[in-house]
Length: 193
Image (cartoon, rainbow, N blue to C red; front, side, top):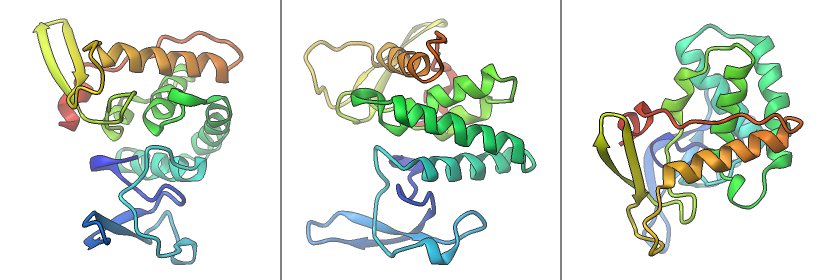
């Protein structure tokens, strides 16, 4: 993932606060060990996170964020590992970014009767086309609209509905064609930006 929830895309390790600048002036951070990722797993590669992370990295992110709210749950983690495998295998093209996989995983966790509302605070919603930030408008108390803040296309389409469609399609492909409407909770953008 990128942005405020960035982590090492290979291992899932948290990133240091200290920034190191590359030859183009980009601020990169080093993965750091913690209770979820051992020092021996780190290779010292600098990163800002990535749009697509490994299955292992997403599982570590899930475990870390889950244990922030709830006690460790080995059964849930085994299930999540299997669900992530299916989601990552089914994902292609615009479905493969962490954001889409995480939202489909959230729907699966909820479907299997686990608490999942906490998960929406741990995924930054980005434009599914260019991965830029979203600009939000609220037309009334029930209608939230988001368009790409970088104007990557001329259509000014609602990116929230695109994100929901991508996550729903991924869910259906990964879980034996079970159609699950994946909704981006209205509270999600307010928590992230």
